[in-house]
Length: 254
Length: 276
Image (cartoon, rainbow over all chains, first blue to last red; front, side, top):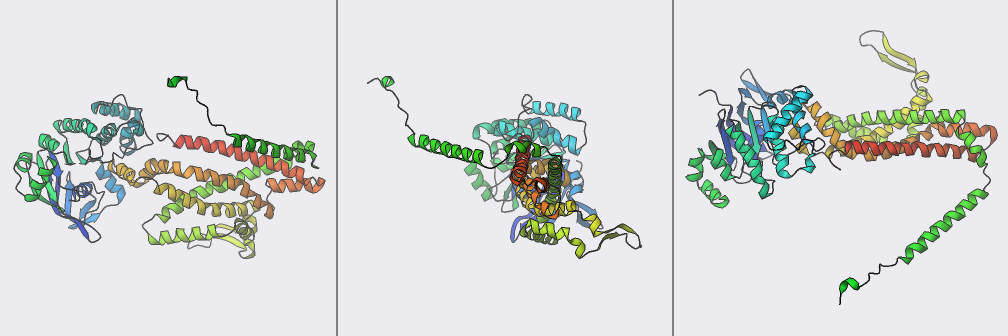
């Protein structure tokens, strides 16, 4: 096996005197889907946000596609990069947010073409053609002209997925992508994510959807209080949990 | 009892009729008084299109537009400084706003206009040489227009800084994260994502301030800048028709302000895309 696409080791992060990540280890191979499960406040989202340097880690390291994200290795030390250069690294890392965060002043189509045109310098016509393909792939080929407020939560989240995919990322991060949705809209977003996983996209998914984890995750990590307490294949962790907190959690959500 | 047979009688608002009649009556009295007043209405159109008045109109609009434009640019910079992680920048912006918002505009205009009393020359030297990029007597540089521009523009920039800051604060931080996540640089994020959304909050108070600016240019008449008021005074100094020339100037103010209102409407519509 080649070098893992994402490698996190001993990641620590504090807000003031509260340590929210207490040494998190995680590896994700290319094409793998990894689900992060755990109770609220366990640090799952914070860890995910560290992977694309929306949060700066205090200790440890996170390598994505061979680069220490947000840093450059010089003379045996990790020097923090200026935002401009972090921006270049983030092109490889797509992210989907709990609250969608679509640009409200741009149509669905413009949301998807924004990155390719503004960041990658692609030609508008070409970017629009690819965006239409992506919108069709998430089932919204006919809604390109709609503004986000004219779309349901599930449709907005699918546009957000298309927007992230438009950058042709090497890995996709999902931060509780269905938590802000009405229950009846969860399925349409999960279907898109399942299809994406089947197509071989490398994904790290913070979720409470145990069913989704069971169906597509190659690997499940269970986090409590800023640390991974149990990890393994979906079957191992979900069907035969060893740690008491994992058992408690699964008993409640299932 | 068949309910469809019952007639509905809406409530009668007699009070509204009384108030309406009262207002119309008062307006009629005012009209009678104005018709009877010693105003040579037939002279107003002549003053309205008088060469000096039109010159004053052009100067008023140029001064207001330049001062507001400069204030907007400075205001954006000051707002960014106030939000900066650098404490020196924050402190400087706070002090600037405190000073320029705290002094009367007329006082500021007078201070700039009299700058020559304390600085005879304004110079920008080329470092490490005896040469100058700029070396001119202050009297040559600080004309009435420049003094008015500085007085009005710097005062307004302090207000604009607060308006822009409120606008930037109104943008959901999730928008910045989303922009970062697709690899946008901080500059692109600001121009493409933050500013267009902040504009919705920034435009209405800015339109308000621009209308104030249009009227505030009248203070430049004190230092002899030929705007509408000064033009009216100059015309009436010959014929003593003070009211008639002032009415002509007043009409121009109302017209220019109305045009500004229309402009604001279209700007708000353009930046309201996707929201309304």
